[in-house]
Length: 382
Image (cartoon, rainbow, N blue to C red; front, side):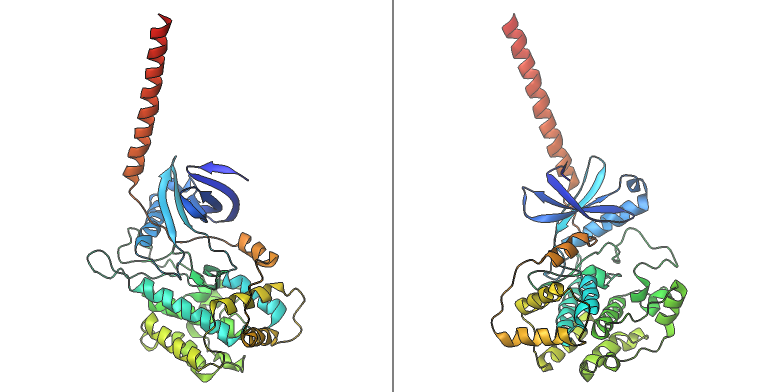
């Protein structure tokens, strides 16, 4: 598939949803490939949805962090709103976890801690952004979940999809009783209509619990049952399912999963500091980006059904002990996973009027050039 959209050459589709489709694209103005998100034209007639799209775009001027997917451009071309953002090569955390469960066993504690550490750092950046007047923006992601986290092929954990993010300055307010985000990761107080940055830390606690245990925490066949589990199900310590989890990691997760937000981590920086201490105390220490990448590549190279419960842990131990870390290159399994994932992320909005002015300038140049050529031809004919 090849399609021209403004300065972008569009290739294969990366994903689609109810509001927009996302394609891999290239532009001469941008060195790296981009994920081009284009709103469906019929959706653009709904004022509230366009407002949400623009809110998503405005966030990008504040979000500048290696753990958050970078955004290049936002605009409207031929009636289509679009966002061009960083294409991050690598599998989603959801794909990595699924492959671990099926082929290599539980995810090592050291890997989970590294992922959690980087996510805490990204959330701390987002939660503390202020506007030009120095006033807190109050950004809440609202959809921290495995499908919105990518482990890049450089060992950087990236948080994507701020499309559901909420700020104090959002132009579109959510309807009362409408929950944005995946129910299994929604904080109990949000179900009652209370939302702040601690809801993101609850979601991260759910993610950590599931990565450490290899099991979904609140999932149920029916949505009502899932919600009831979120509200009242006793939450076991991860170490009950995974004896490799040390007490301090149990404490980090269970604090994030305190149903009373006043007893939860109050700031991402607090959870980041505690995770940093746990990493320092762990036998493996903090993983280097290359060690993380090599382990992820090893996971996707495993194709046989799971035979040994701790094979993933053993492989990471061998990688750490080898002292010679070599990235083997992009594996077909990773490439395939990367191509099918859904892409929704943040964006920024340059001045649209400038684009329109430039467009009219070029139109005027072409028109006057054509008129001049016709006039010259008529003179010569005489």
